[in-house]
Length: 273
Image 1 (cartoon, helix red, strand yellow):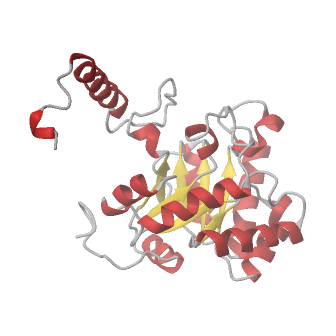
Image 2: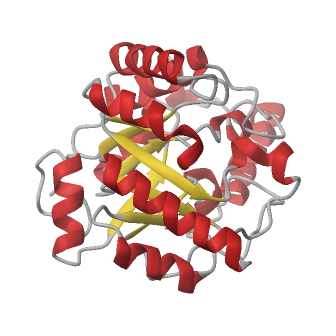
């Protein structure tokens, strides 16, 4: 058995994403950035693993996702790919790797795929980058879109607040989703948008939608694994459900280790050669 609720051990593909939407099966996605975590996530039965550029925050301690590089994303993606046997592995293209133009975007996309071994790439944006997305798709690389709150554009928006609450922005999001769908994206992440809008978009497009802070009307959900496991502190958006408190568990365990070392209790006779 691949996971708690998953008996199908076949490799998840982009085609199976479409099939899951067609039969009304919700898609589960989580981030991972390292070999050990990705192996656990895959074994638990998650359908897709995202090597998010959130590694910039979670792994490197940056305030935004902007500083992370193509080389760093490849490093994380390569480690994740080595651990995964079932889940679809999707890697974010980082800021600056595709915004300049189609040629550079396709070149970087090919490099990430070749050097990481991942299954697909994710790009933020709609109409503004549609030609680049088409170029990447024409190169035979599956693309997952990303609309709504797009963290790589944080300096443009100036806030991480909910997007597309106003009619004009909502209509643009719908148009962008349709463009991505028509271009051939196998999925679209909808981040921090009103639940009603996300549900409407999900019905309009053929490809699955993956929500984060977008309500229950999307075709699937994604969370940052360190957030949902309670490893990160001080980040508690409304959409985040914590399934564990590993931060406290780890702190207590490490604290006990320190105590045992200081007291001379560790290692004891049975732990010595």
